[in-house]
Length: 502
Image (cartoon, rainbow, N blue to C red; front, side):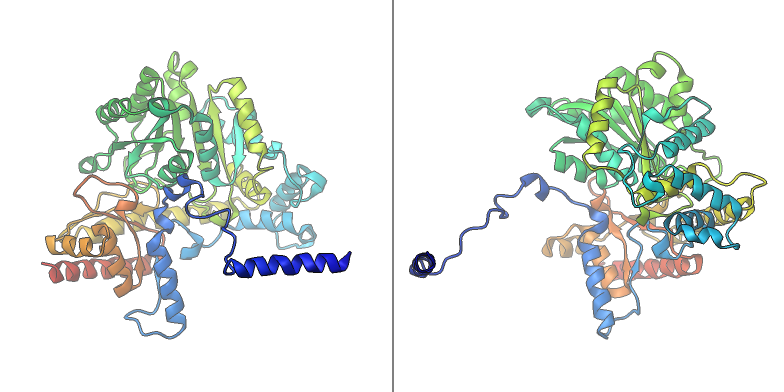
């Protein structure tokens, strides 16, 4: 038997040699892969960030550069920018991961009590166990109570699905909504500028992106007349069924007024649109006179028919706010007025991924139900929270002030969130140079900025912008002194760049 097998192997080898040793074609090739994936783009981690990482490696190897470090101002990653974790959140997390720390007398009793409650809600009293697919029931109930305190209207754990950050929940809701073929394919209205998660998810799901433009000249305001224009245009090529709102805005930093939110809800009701409210920056409000109003609160206070009929999904996350726990991946979606059968399908959909990270769920619980007055951790928690938000408010003011001192840079007030989105004027010679390099003009500017200063920001073309305008998005998260240097360095580079191409 063995000689026969050896003979067969030899014959096969000879046949391969006769064919010139050609390898069999791969199953997965650029031509055979899912074409929708090719259309996915995600600017905040795109080519400019790839180059920033290469430059970091070049610096480590000792290659001479006109700077000593790369400053990654491209993404809202608070802890990477030096923000210290909130003590209570990390104490509870540490206790859940390592219960023997319960013996440590330096850890406050309320952190230990919280950890014990959370562990008792976990399978086998361990964070290493799967949770229920929609999340740990106790955490869902605490999210519902948080929403009730925030909004003054009822909330139920059955309407809340915990998630791997807000991003995962947003994609799952879009999956439920996208259907149809050709002119009946689902259209999704998204703001321009937008957070690239939306355009990327729509490309992957092969939904139709319908752009509505925020009014830069009015501090990135949302105008219902513009929503109507976008909807009419969209209906010529698809079936618009979804309206996405980001409030406070990313990348634009605007905070919507209650009146604006009411107008949007009325529009969604009249046009039979499902509302998706991305509210992950709800704690990040800086401008005097600005206030966060949740879509859920406004919807319920408007009463029937709106409160009974407008379908809404709203999202929150532990990655932003004062927490900045991006890497632990926790968040939730609350659904309102969702058809019970569809909600059952959402429950099935989230079960496919088993469960969100349990650690992220536990951090979410501590955010939703923080220490109360009189408890051992309360004063420290409040002081740390206020220090983070106070510093961000100062950095928002500083960013607008320094940018607007530079001729050719126009920066709207950063009312909320964690970014500025300045408009830059670029001379015709710079546009021609960008065209030669086959780059968008603001990408050309941002790449030059990176190569000459080490500052990594994201070109506005990655978020969308009105034709003929150019922007970049920059986070306001670096420590105040470092941010000031960064802003002045960037402004100086811009002036030099304009002079070079004038």
